[in-house]
Length: 249
Image 1 (tube, rainbow, N blue to C red):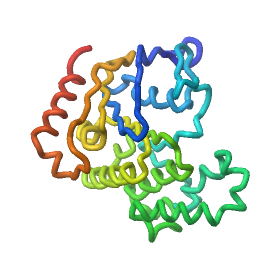
Image 2 (cartoon, one colour; image 1 turned 90 degrees about the vertical axis):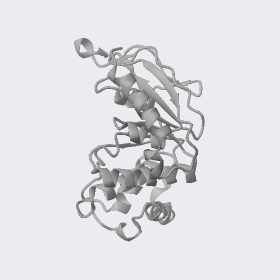
Image 3 (cartoon, rainbow, N blue to C red; image 1 turned 45 degrees about the vertical axis):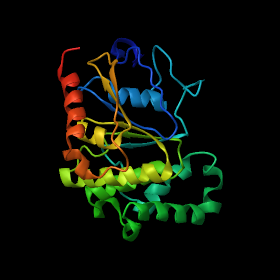
Image 4 (cartoon, one colour; image 1 turned 180 degrees about the vertical axis):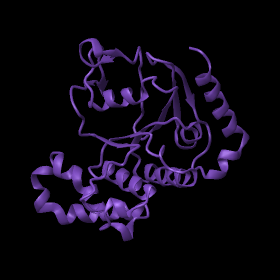
């Protein structure tokens, strides 16, 4: 799988096939530059492939998918919009919501307020991004990715810029959102503890061109709390993943 133009085109992914069940939480890990983020952008339709093909549920991906919600390491909240208005933004853009957004704004605003409340931002709906901490901004960003009720939530290093305490706090927030909404989640991360804590299945990618080295099922009972990260079974999975990524492939 390659993308780009002319001489700048790069083969970033090779012979990758993923089967993700409805409601499953998968994580993709691997060395820097292996194509993890590129894989996500290709699947979501944000980058068209120069070679190769992608299909979801048997249908080829030819452009940005409306059924996907995305959040990135940078929350990318618009600084001139409140948290509430940032969350509502996709409904102003994505059909079929866009056509009737003005008419249905109060209904959508109530749902956005419920979403923000579910992640601990009930009292911050009218605050601007610069009035929110980094963790609060990421919570709002995840709510924005969920507001149009996507089938798949794609997260590209969403907690990478946060301190360790806030990061673990947001692991629990994401765990609870996924459990309540049964949304399918694909998480790209460098944090192996994060991957094992959150995911049902972890895929390990090789150096570029990225291939899937291992599909690792996380057989740790749910619901998981942070204490599980100190247990031997959890540590064993993390060490296995680290050994795979640290080896030469």
